[in-house]
Length: 156
Image (cartoon, rainbow, N blue to C red):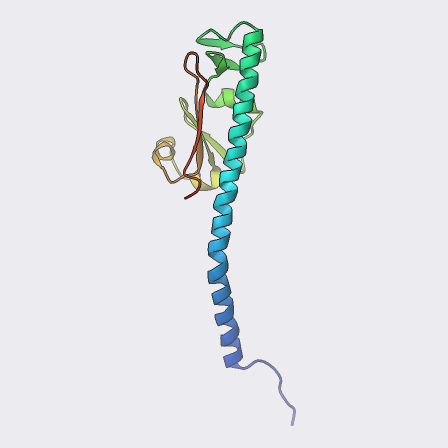
């Protein structure tokens, strides 16, 4: 007689239960890490946009266009009171920004940056109205003020 080796049904069930418990503990941690990563990414984008706005303003001052409501720098960047105008085309130029796999720009006045994975089946109106989305909003400058760049919906 040959002795058979292998796992019993009880042993397999125990392993499946243990894996289920481990995944129930790990999934919430992963979700928390993902939202933290999204928030950090948006903070980085906000910093880049603030720096780019400051540089555009400096160029506008050098070219004498900082006191004009609407102007265009020699680089092709359109300004509103010396800061970047809030159109998708203009902000792509300011940031040397490429949409595609991760990002989507929506709307104009203001322009909203979102993660494409969250918004791929949503209209611009739905994106603007949804307060639960992790998004960055760029509103162009008013006279004698800086543009308003805000992040919303990224973390609890």
